[in-house]
Amino acid sequence: MDRITEAFRNFNERHERVKKYVHTAWRVPLPKWGQAVMGCIYFSIPVIGGWHVMQWAIGNAHKSIGPKGEYLEVKEVQGIGQVANVNGEQKRVGAGGLGMGVKLAVSDKEDQERSKKMLAKMLRQNRRRKKEREEEQNKAATDEVQTQA
Image (cartoon, rainbow, N blue to C red; front, side, top):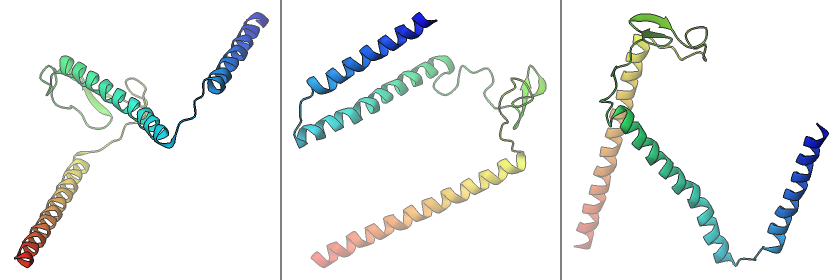
């Protein structure tokens, strides 16, 4: 056991020496524009990499279930909350049920209907506000044209 801990300790010490050497001996001071460029590079690498990972995942999802779920055997969710239809039999899933997972959010038909109504109301309000903003912008643009004429 002492050999293993000694090996880890030696590895850690050598790794620290390499890090110190790289961050002191190889360091090149950058001007402000160089720092800005490097900041953009350091920011964009994970963003672009993440975008590519997402495109790969979307492609794999389309291969397995189809772009709109055409390859799925069951196209609609069966069961509500912690109750699911498994092989034609109603089973409890989540905490204490099939899979012994976490407790799932439970909603009944009334909750779903209420959520649909609230969502529809919010979307109507947003459409109305957008329409009002567009009308104000159009009015301001026509007023500006009239004042210039």
